[in-house]
Image (cartoon, rainbow, N blue to C red; front, side, top):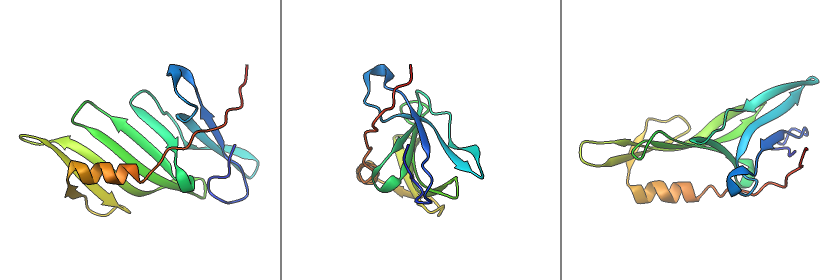
Length: 133
């Protein structure tokens, strides 16, 4: 549990250490509001993963094959994910094309190196697990 939106209420981060990974891959994030549980982020999977990054930023990384990938970065505000930036790729005529969008701005074409630099700004954090048997 960790207060990732700084509202004084800890969010529950459901994670797993399967696949030999550290406990950093998040299946779901749940928050409490008025005594009820609400999902903030959910349905992480093999090609759609959530991570907690530095400064309580949530990264959602996915892929639909070698040419199609996306990295979206969010803040949690009032129990909702608010996108602050994204990087994605798609197959062009002769190459893979990369794009960046900040705060829902129109996507701007960037180089692969620029995409990697943006992605490297969001460092995944290891989570301390509470193991339930």
